[in-house]
Length: 316
Image (cartoon, rainbow, N blue to C red):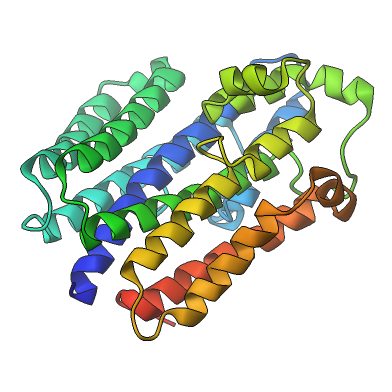
């Protein structure tokens, strides 16, 4: 497959997944902002989300005081933010348009219809009236895109590059969603009183990754931060966990390997093995925030290596 074609497929999937995960992260903050808390704590929650998304400086440069409305506008529709949901869905559609001949008609029409429907929903004021409903729509369109891809496309290199893009992006974003809670803190996990106070936060976080029912089925007990971290990092049977994402990355890399990709496969395999054989207590003792920060750095490096070996290399 031509590098340019693989690049478009990879980034089509990454942008679609990024839009979904941005919606998930925002929905956590919208839900938790409705809990009883001080104005300072509410602002810190939004700042933590901007910080872990590496968008705090861009937001501060463009806006004055931080408000919920401004953060939602910046993260959803702002054309100056290349990571906004609108920008991501636009880029996904443009990448799909560039390789229409490689995609099935159903996959292209799904991407195009998502882009058209997004503009209608944003202009209708849905984000202002009911942000959670808008975020559910973003998640639904992402689910639909994946389902149509797997249901209609030949299982050849095109699908493997799409899957690589999906799971590299999902691993990155699952780590960020989990780390929002710990971003900027130096303490490990929190006291029992704090755990009880934060019960609704953890429930909202689990729902944001479609993990609430899974948590109840696996643990059958009260929600605790340690178990949430274990579920989202080390459970290979949890679809959005770091380990499940790296399972998919390693398997799809094997399917597209070439003469120069051995080092990249080893790099991915080592990251996968460390998750596979890790223990949550060891991770917590080392520091969850530090562990997630290191994981994000390594996933970023893995994405760069994939671009170097298979795609159009990223500009320095």
